[in-house]
Amino acid sequence: MATVKQLPAGGVSAQATPHANPPSNHRRKRRWLGLAYLAPALVVYGFVVLVPAIQGVWLSFFHWNGITAASWAGLANYTGFLQDPALRQAIEHTLFFIVFFSLLPITLGLASAALTARKDVKGAAVYRWIIFLPQVLTPAVTAVAWKRVYAPDGPINSVLRAFGLDSLAHGWLGDYDWALPAIGLAGTWAAFGLCMVLFVAGTQAIPAELYDAARVDGAGPIREFLTVTLPGLRGQLAIAVTLTVLGAIRVFDIVWLTTRGGPGTSTITPTIVMYQRAFANPDVGAASAIGVVLALVSLVIALVVVRLSENGNR
Amino acid sequence: MISTREKIFNYAFLTLLAVSVLFPIVYILGVAISPSTSGTLDLGHPQWSNFATAWHQAGFTQYLRSSVIITGTVVVVSTALAVMSGYAFGVLGVVGEKALFPLVLFGIMIPMESIIVPLYYDFLAFDLTDGYQGIILAHIGTGVSFGAFWMRAAFRAVPASISESAEIDGAGSWTRLWRIYLPISRPAILTFVVLSFMWTWNDYFLSLILVAAPEHQPLTLGLGAFSGRRLVEVNLLAAAAVLMSLPIVGLYLFFQRQFIRGMLSGALKG
Image 1 (cartoon, rainbow over the protein chains, first blue to last red):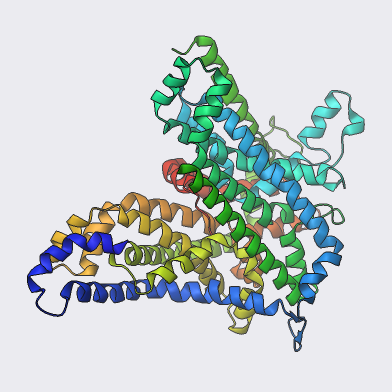
Image 2: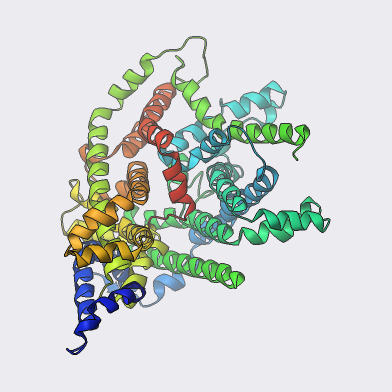
């Protein structure tokens, strides 16, 4: 990369070529200088991210309560996953959350991009501001808002009672069956704006000629969407899938601040299991093992999505 | 080309979306000014003193102080590190770049949740969980990857010829960074600043684990503590939540473009 930039510079120092290859010498010096510029960031990054990442792998092979001496566990912390009912439940909840945090927002985002894109809307900036707002709001604050919305005497139940459906009114977050979808819906609410704005911006980058050509060929709105819009949004889809799926896998704040994984374990997630293992009744090895698997899954997803979207571009 | 019918449908559709997005937010605003402590909406008797009462009861002065110190330091240092590492990767080149750049990108792809347990025990060993240093360091460290990635792209977009002519005139790498690259890349830097502010201000998870002492905890934890109290007064809780969001909403009002551009690029903090 840097080499490409320096090609023209080679011409400048060409007069000096009789000596021992000055351009590459110059370049080498420059790259050491680059390392010096990078060094402070690298040190902090190493201390905060790289070293703990390696330690996490190491710790996951031990039984350790955080205080007394650790003992070798081998793969016990990993094989223990299979028998851990809380964790199995947490993984099921993650799959459930992927539907609400990723699939639904992306589908809704695509639909609304298809419906509203390429049409002049006055005040589009205001709509965009509002629809994107949940992305920037503090999760601690949105948790307060959603807790209120779902409260036994909250607005949802008021509406139900107003329609005479008193039997359906209850505390949604305190219900074993309803707490999970209730949180899921809050996740859809938060992620949907990002997907929509992303896709609308994407459709604006698709050349208008493609749409004209589709029209000339007599394509209806659905075929136009499938043959022009969707392929044109490949890059944006990759970003949306990565961000939202990773968001579902690592979700903590909104769950912890609304239900703490409860009632019982009905909204427990892998990060909450990890938090409890690490700090409530420390089993640091098991918590680290969860962290390692979380990292591996995230890496694989990020790499697969990027690879898929690149292949499609060729 | 677009019929009036289509136009009306468009507006109706967008308005429906906007209303459903705004509903929980506006509702909590309403609760925040209602006199009822159980959280019943009562807009007929707005009680504006809720904000001041909530501020005092929740002890927000101290939490705000912590949030400002943490966020301020993190944004300044993170931005400096992002600029320098982006300059290294994007302009100067780095010894061992083929290994180092993927190594730095690794931090974008793994979530910070997966390193938090060992990080906590490291910080405990180094006595970093008491004051502000630990949480600040954690935020800066987890922001390095995106910063390097983002500023590298920004600096690579600057035509090399400008910098080369300055180099011939004898400008060193530091001068070129300040005189050429920084001024041209102001929009990208602003976007990074805004994102860094948002990530730090909004953070709950890192602070929950890495900040033990209440007097060093940021607003997000303060709100959590306030809502965890027995017999919580819901209207005050709502008022506190509203107060806490003001800085970020205000920033978003002024820098909508930067927020959206940054996050649409797939910005992820490790």
